[in-house]
Length: 234
Image 1: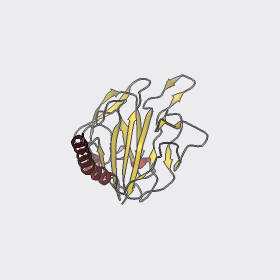
Image 2 (image 1 turned 180 degrees about the vertical axis):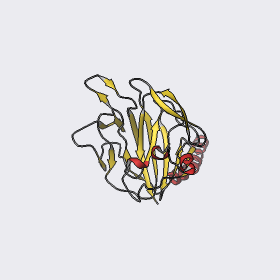
Image 3 (image 1 turned 90 degrees about the horizontal axis):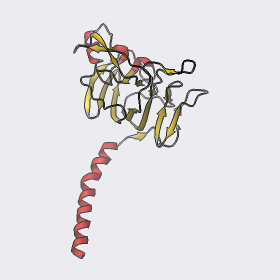
Image 4 (image 1 turned 180 degrees about the horizontal axis):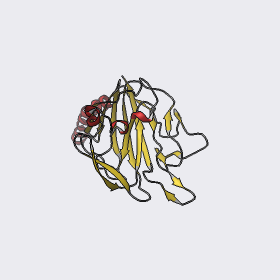
């Protein structure tokens, strides 16, 4: 028995020793932006309650405005989990792009659309959606006349998980340059976002909505959830 207990103790020690530093290193320097209980630290749109905390996640029904951090940020690394909990309404047309970011057609996609504004304004939007090009696209720059900026705004790969599954995203913002890693795959690598400003809040986007009169969802509605939001300022 003593031998068995000793073996278990040694095994546990090895597990703790080999795993703890990894997690500590992963989260070193990060602070939480969401406590899992309420929206403390965030500005909710006046007069609406569409942003709610349910079972430790931020839940949204696309029935109000954007959710914004109270604090402004400049250069940072943001880690955030998100998922579209479902789609609603009819499909809508998404743009198709070639490898250089040029529009070459359209394709019907599931009704789900949101985004993260990394410097407060819509110009700094990183898209979250079900488009064939994948999440991470820089919407305000996909039509840029500068070929390098236009190409850089397009995700290198579609790394999205299916609707209903959680995605892990890391956004690194330095100056006017952004890098996005989605589910351990780099989808944007030091892409340029000229004119986005030097500092601003982080914004979780409202998109689409429900038409009470017609009892229908508009196209590209943000039926989305967020959790485990952490930031490290650089």
